[in-house]
Image (cartoon, rainbow, N blue to C red; front, side, top):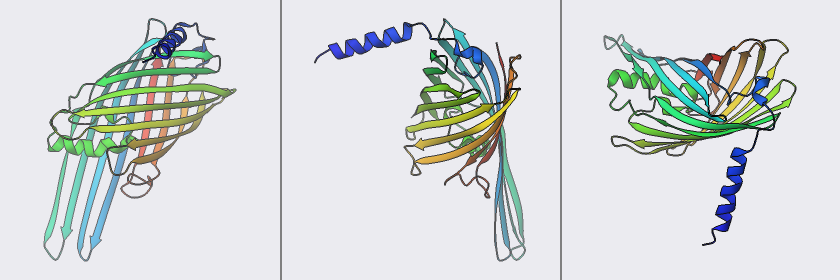
Length: 297
């Protein structure tokens, strides 16, 4: 076997990693993969479905709140440490009524639970004043090892909230490993494009099947001369171990990022576009309110 191509590739990669950055792109404020920050994310999902036949009425309602405390710490130049601490609250309620049968019953289940804590690292650098790249990976601790009925109801209410993105945070009875990379570029003055891709491999911890999910997202953001901006995000999750392979979702969003402040915020509505979770504005489908607030330091 000829080792020269492998050796040449290794040398080129080492030179690329060690090369000085072309310009400090993060000073422009649109680069998210660089620098240190702390962020709190909140997803809100509420949906319901009802059925009626003759004098029989049935209804199922779900409500989910997903929290995530996210940290990114610049460490030793271009290397960054990452951490995620997810928390979820969810409830599922069902009712069944029939005058002819003399039945009027209802039940509910739900709880507050901690998700899988995640630790990782990524390498981020500028290729020019208008282009930045990053690549990294993470491991999630499988704390959701044996969910009871209330925990399963919480997962039912919260797991679909991101249209099968970021499943490593709440996937039960699995050990998730994730690799992620992407680019950030300023296409024009105050017009920013971001693209990233991730592969999540989740190994079962107590029976079950291995899960493999590919994530890809594209985001276009326009910032005004003031503190506000907005844009669109299009994402696709490929759940390669499930029957329904692809799930596409669209998120219009607004951002608040004053130039002279380290605080920032974002609000968006993530709408699933195709089955099985979409169309998101229909009954019992996925339309999630996404909120985030953070601080750079």
